[in-house]
Image 1 (cartoon, rainbow, N blue to C red):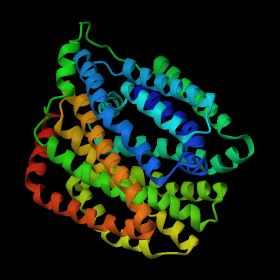
Image 2 (cartoon, rainbow, N blue to C red):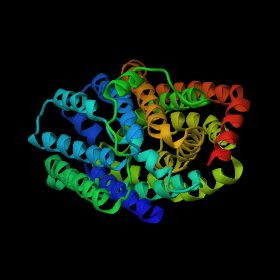
Image 3 (cartoon, helix red, strand yellow):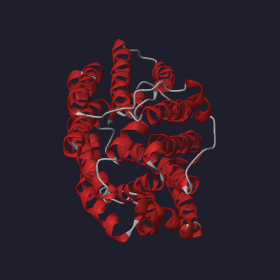
Image 4 (cartoon, rainbow, N blue to C red):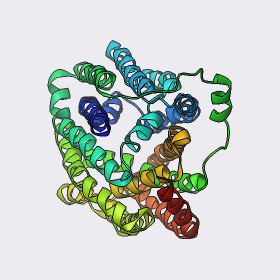
Length: 391
């Protein structure tokens, strides 16, 4: 059953990743061309995660209470379908897309249950995450390669339609291919609501959250400036932009299985430290390079995926099955919330100091990441060892 469940989850996520990347790879520059300010782009990355921080914890608490992942994963894909159908209605006002995203964030159902399901199919958590990430990122990269050309030829409405079809196919795949036997009991909505606003986490959970939060801010100070800088370096060519972004993604998805097995051998903490040290050289280089070819080549270096696998694996290690969806969704929500705060700040900062200086600031955030890893090393090592014994 484990292999069948993994295949269903990976196949569904891959189809959705491919279809969503058709529009997602150019979504920010599409809104940019519609007249969205950098502040609005920052708000688009900030407001929905602020709401989903609480909503995802609520749904994940229900998932843990029922010992069920499937209905929440399916409902999450169907929610994505509904959002895209609204996008298809279309608008030339970029604020419209912000408003829809805020409304939809109340129904953030799938993040915790999906990660809990993936990390439960095998005791080799990091290796499983690496394999899962390979499937998802390979599909996303393939979609990204054709995204710019697709949108220029057929338009964003057609791209949204492809995304909607992918979300529907993903929901059907999980419905038909994923097997589980949930406990037949009535969940407590009151308890779920209370936990959504609580500070409950397993031992070590808040330390992992601090690492994830800081790395998310680092990502915000890197990703949007890099995307827009690359767009300008490539003379605002959407096909070239999406092809470049997708080429960069190839390094990450090819490295994911290798990194997963490396984390299994070396441990999560060493992987977190290695990736953070690599960023100390990488981030300043992104700020100073002005050659399109050199910038794209540097963007291909897969560092972030190692940090992601290590932090997700560590979170799964410290959480039991009875609280895994809640723990994973909390950490994912903190990642999104911290990233949203970073996106909100970066929109204002870029308008004042430009792309390159904003990228330089990400190095300072990375120093904080490094300090946190070193300061929490012994406690996180103990929490990880305890989790490994319980698996």
